[in-house]
Length: 114
Length: 117
Image (cartoon, rainbow over all chains, first blue to last red):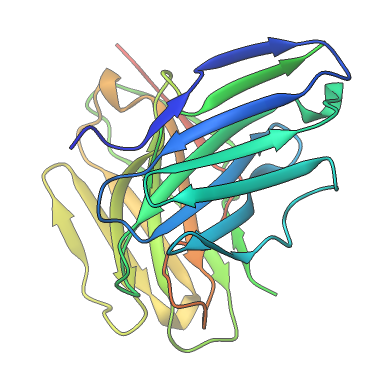
């Protein structure tokens, strides 16, 4: 398996623009997570899905952020409108159903909002 | 609330030295999982180890070893005979209980390890 695939790897956008980050989890994994990494806050969970259903979005910072998982092999994280403080590395991760399963992370998307 | 503390922000060692990265956690739950992840300069997060709260046996994998002590709520990571390729940021993480998954994680702030020749 190719692992968790995220696109794009880098994104530079202007404040106010819409940004969409994409993720393809490992085939057969039932859980999908979106994490954000910043210097100030470290790694923090934004939202996670189980079998394509959002389970906990309490980490989503504002209504400007939304995430979807239309099928088992694809998820998006959208920011609209983007702001400079959204600049961060966004990681997608997936794991098996087993309650002990570790998460496998994608390579991340480095977002810069200018 | 759960918490993971990695008090060492940055460690520098010379190649072949042994180095221990500390991790202390807080949780009220009796069933939980602890993890270590490595983030090399390329940026991805690489899974290293998972340990459940009922298994206090130390684990060794090549030059890597882990010491889990429930009595002190610590899960320390030792690299023996460090190499330049070990240079990375290392994160300790704790699973959130009662979620059906071990991968809803609280991360520590990470320890940056620099290994020089």
